[in-house]
Length: 420
Image (tube, rainbow, N blue to C red; front, side):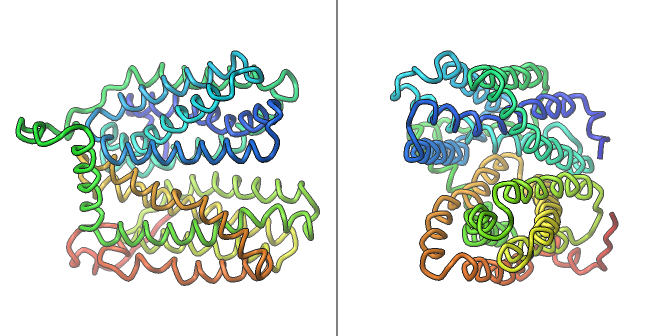
């Protein structure tokens, strides 16, 4: 799992992003405290979070349209500069900053993050040999999930001790650490941003070229049924299963599990499971990564259903198991995309993957609120749990689904072997 760190450029990438991910995990907590300190109330916080989510989606659409036209490290550097400047501007006067300026900065930070994420997911194949990609993805997942525990904890301690302003400057420092490592990375020129003929350049402006690139990403997904089916499955599960569970978790915790401590405990268990899943996912060797990955998705059934029928101990166990399963899926899925999708369109496919699996989550939250009010939280969770059972196997029903590969069927029919 740690062999990818022997590759200089990936070691720079992982080190910088491990620090930066802590700042990324701190920012939502700090932002919420800043908004509340500005006397915006719950309504104002909801508006800010919604605007940030929309900006993130806009940035991802831009990444799906134009992200492969530049070197990925350059896209990441540009996005980090925008985010660092935006956070620093808020940190100067978090409470007294003009509201319009504050919202513009939040939008800029969200768009930059939307551009950054697909580029970060697509850059490892330019830094690592193919056999090291799974270990590299496992390392990235490990640092991400450790930061999900460490970031909010650090943010809470700093805010409680000295306020949100210094916490924001710590976030700026993590962006500086990211930039300090990105500038030293030598990204390979192979399959760099594609060259266009003069006729293609004259065919239209930026918008038309962006639409053409976006459509090319769609065509790449359509040519690989396992990719389209997996994104479709993730969209259903995240929107109609995970979103209702996240919405219901604090409600169930307050009613029957022991209050806010139980709510925090469930997410702590999820984080611990995710860290374990990062370690396990880096060690799996199998000819059927799609089958193993889908088995990981089935663990969401237990995490969602446990909120409806189990006491706190059962919920904690199920959420930890789900953390393992979902992280294993993520590592195998990311590795498969990096190995199978051509490098010239990989950034766009990564962006479209995010849009499909995460873009409809806000709609899922809204729909879950209506459904819970109509049929009750418990019944909603039971329905959501069974949706997992129906949706999870969908990738296995199409060509390449069991192997997460577009290789000929003859390869798929070889006996399956799996080791951890």
